[in-house]
Image (tube, rainbow, N blue to C red; front, side, top):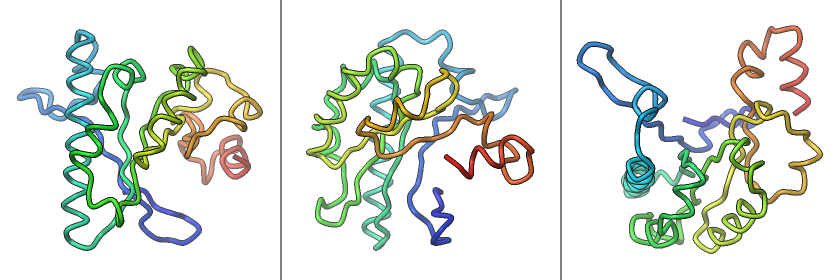
Length: 175
């Protein structure tokens, strides 16, 4: 779940890829994608996007209209028919609040014009991009201020203990 802290209510949902290993239990993506080929990663991205959209349709059928979020590498966004996938699997467009695709800051910094192009291309389908893991690649807030992204997600290093940590608390509040 994604919670709007000001309104104290559910604001959306984010899908996370996980694998279940017989000995090691639940694995995070880094553990099962490290040796994956580019083709495998693109297929996984397509499955993640399609699964999230199908779950969104089920929520919508139950009268719950939530914005969906999913992490997709920029390389997959370039090669996948994102607009067509969204149109084929999204809930009814009139009630659908849309989808957020998280792209890590380091991927955006490598090719800002590409990220801007993707942002404009996906807008027609009510798909917006978010900057994920902000702060890991040493960006300045002034750099991202003018970029057309729906969300800015601080890196885990900054939000850990943000309610009590001497340095992270004021940083999180300010951002």
